[in-house]
Image (cartoon, rainbow, N blue to C red; front, side, top):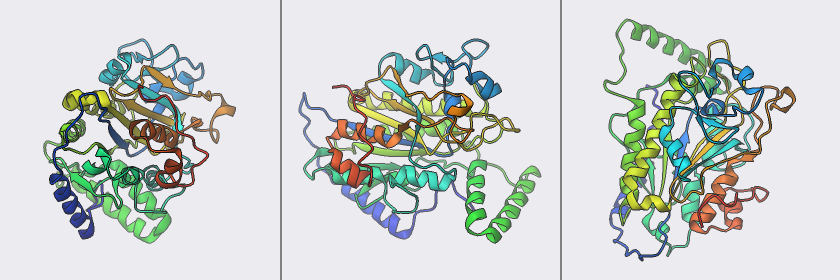
Amino acid sequence: MLCETPSPSRRALMAGSGALFAWASIPKFARAATARDPRFVTIILRGALDGLSAVAPVGDPDYAGLHGELALRLDGDHPALPLDPFFALNPAMKSFHAMFKDGEAAVVHAAATNYRDRSHFDGQDVLESGQPAPNMTDSGWLNRAVGAMPAGERVARAGALGVGVSTPLVMRGPTATLGWAPENLPPVGDDLVHRVLDMYAHSDPALGGALAKGIQTDKMAAKDGMGKPKPGYDPVAAMRRSAEGAAKLLAADAGPRVAALAFDGWDTHIAEGGATGRLAQLLGGLDGALQAFKEKLGPAWADTTILAVTEFGRTVHINGTTGTDHGTGTVAFLAGGAVKGGRVIADWPGLKPNALYQNRDLAPTTDVRAVAKGLLAAQFGLSEATLAKTVFPETAGVKPMADLVRA
């Protein structure tokens, strides 16, 4: 049976158990009244987010015609939420919009990693491992960042948190982490099925064919009532539950200061929806998760930065099933009381035919590794050399983005 995240190996389970014990035994540290106590959270949006329907360039004259019925509008029954004269937010993200207006949230647009192919597995590997190419390591950049902090630093002593039945790759590695998974795990989604089939179509066509037949049989059985989704599972509520649990741990005096979560389901090939529909439902889930962090972190919210990123974007044009296919440029969301917000950060490339990447995608102009580097440097003082060699190897040319965090 397929699962959204692979079952952890026995070795991983043993390591996780040890990490839990080690974290639980950390003494309660005294906090100076005036000292900053920063938190950093990464949320991986797996499946490739359509950035043009999440944060719409409504001021671009080519946008509405290219993105068709998925394009957001400033009028109508479900108007987009203006961020500035050029960009507007999906109406499902009302909490993020309020944070943006309060200066606690920002958007980075036309962003991507250095990965330019369109395989979910490879794209996610590059995004989470922080390596220049897929399949180079089994550790993640956030785990290495925590490991690079001086041993006496509070963040290093308190450890880090990985949320999910299997710790997200971005948090796996030699540095001990606390693992936590909410109850009522999700059923297998169509986007995962597509990603698995895509992987085996390239690596093992025979197995891929057999797997496809098996999936088709399973779908037929489901239509006859032989298979039903996990009762009571709500992906939107699940995002908020995960965030609430993580926030409570991060807010604790002796709790971790760094966390990673992964939300699946963003592969919107079919019936994506724009201001309403499936994508809006997912964005509402992310919005609820960000609001949960703000509520449950309490005073710690003031020192918190959250980075929500995806492996790549989606095509500018919609496809024949009212969805979008794998693309390149997309958006990254920043939230938290420490974020220098109220801005859309974008070197906008435009949507003219000659400006599109490979004549089909929003061209990326910002490297998300620069965003992550900037947050890590500002929050925890990691040096540019450490970020370029240890956290994101071979990235000396990718400079940390400045001015993302309040002074």
